[in-house]
Image 1 (tube, rainbow, N blue to C red):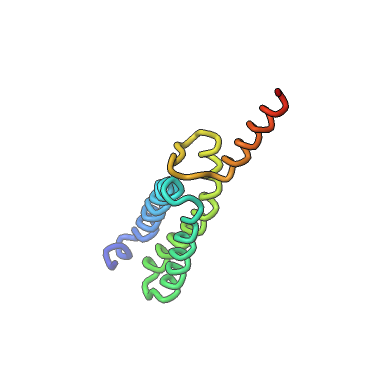
Image 2: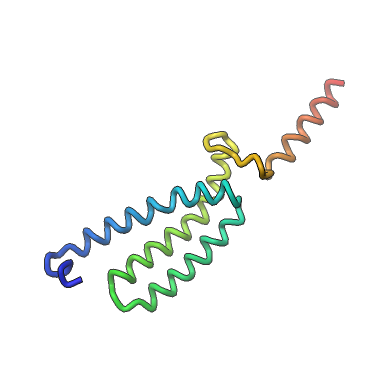
Length: 119
């Protein structure tokens, strides 16, 4: 850490690590929604809370900052889970054929109602 502060690189390293942390969360959201659905939000809640506590307890500024970035990226992941499900509904991302989605029942009901109207 002395090297980073001596050459004034802490800001650049923090920016790079923040970029990598945020970039890491995008595939986690996609894979989490695919395999676990909206239940995966609880992973982000727990991880965010743990990283918040860790950030408060960390003694170094760099570690505390990175834990804070991770915590709020995790909290952002909670919001992204809902948006990811919407992207799956629109067909932008693959849906898991082993799961049912909230819109599946409504689609079946509409098909049944359309058949009844035609008959």
